[in-house]
Length: 107
Image (cartoon, rainbow, N blue to C red; front, side):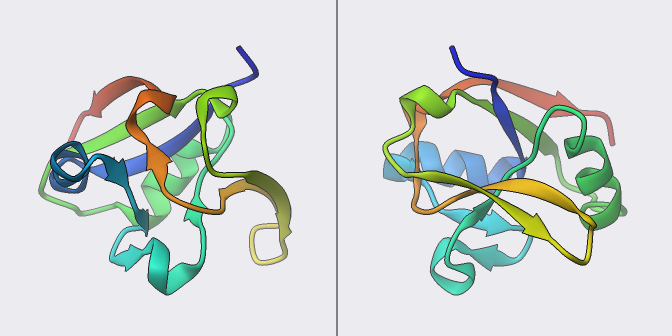
């Protein structure tokens, strides 16, 4: 397996993905259609993403571990000037079988 990438998700969005067969939320409050890609992160980045964008969320938050080799959508690593670092972006929906682990996070 290639080095996994991660996506912080709301449990309700993940449940909706399981019903529809694919995950298409870019980040909290933004869909893939609105953003053009799904935000992802490396293992050393996702906790900062959670702290910045999901602080104060009262519903269950998850971290999805994704195997890039299983994705049917392309992953492009891009520099994000605002953050001063590179992040993996998924240019299309996440097929559910690419998600190898789902971990609930403490509130």
